[in-house]
Length: 143
Ligand code: RB5
Figure 1 (cartoon, rainbow, N blue to C red):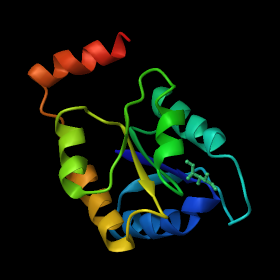
Figure 2 (figure 1 turned 180 degrees about the vertical axis):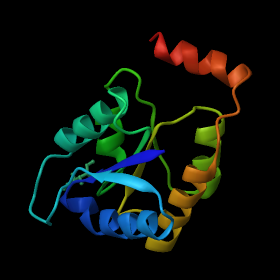
Figure 3 (figure 1 turned 45 degrees about the horizontal axis):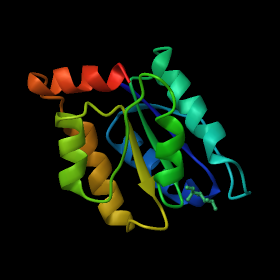
Figure 4 (figure 1 turned 90 degrees about the horizontal axis):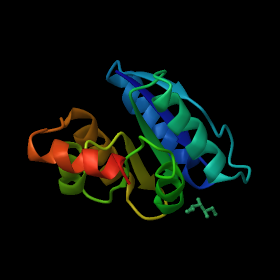
C-alpha cells in the first residue's frame, strides 16, 4: 500500500512527523508537498493527492492543514474520494471500518502531535468491514 502525503503551510510540521512515522514503519509514501512553511493553497494540494489515488499511484492519503477541514472539503469534491477529518482514534477506526475512507485529514492547529500520530497509526491499521457498509458507501458514490 502506498500513501500520498500532503499539507499546506499550516500542516507542514505534522507532514514531516507523519513521514518520519511512515519511514519508521516501512510504509511506502509519496510526498506531494508543500516543502516549506511559505503560505500556499490547500485545495491545490488536496486535488493533487486525490488525483494520485484516483489514478492508482497511491491507495490512500493523508492531508494536513491548520484545521483539517479545508483539506477534507476540497478532497471530497473529487469523485471516488472519501476524506475523513479525525480528531480521535475512535473516529479513525470507525471511518475505515464503516466509510472505507481513503484520505485521512488532520488539523495541526487542532489536534496534539501524539494524538495525531496515534490517529494515523489507527487509521492505517484499520480495515473496511464491507457488508451493510458497502451498500452505504456505494450510495455515497452515486451522489
Ligand atoms: C491556512 O491559514 C488555513 O486556512 C488552512 O491551513 C486550513 O486550516 C484550511 O482549512
